[in-house]
Length: 174
Image (cartoon, rainbow, N blue to C red; front, side, top):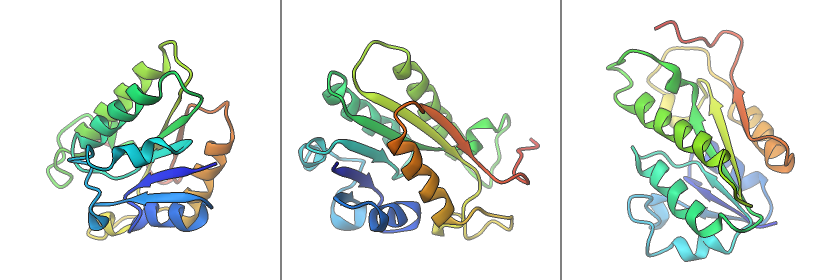
């Protein structure tokens, strides 16, 4: 099984990339920007699984759309890395539009999960995790290696289409 991972040079993407055999990485730092995937998306399409991990505004949703439209009639898997931040009901200026972008990803996944297709679409919502992206936030965080283990388990369990990974202390109060 060949696995494509966006954002493979840091954080969760890097952990997944180092642990999944036959993985192929796509990252802004390796000239694979999700803002402009057209020059490189064909090499991603030869994979069996796509882990849509890189975050850059609504571009993560655009990546889901592009890959899904190519794979919808194939027995392949798209795993989208979302966030429990999508559950925030009020604007949190410290997080900017991140919760809104992740909510859009959640909605896109849910709608694609309910149409007739061969491609499996999975949505994984993750709570606070210890990555470079969360360095400025003073809160308890999930270890990246534990989260990666759960994602790999979901990748191999064809019955799972949605899961939330968070610590018991992680609840959005606003």
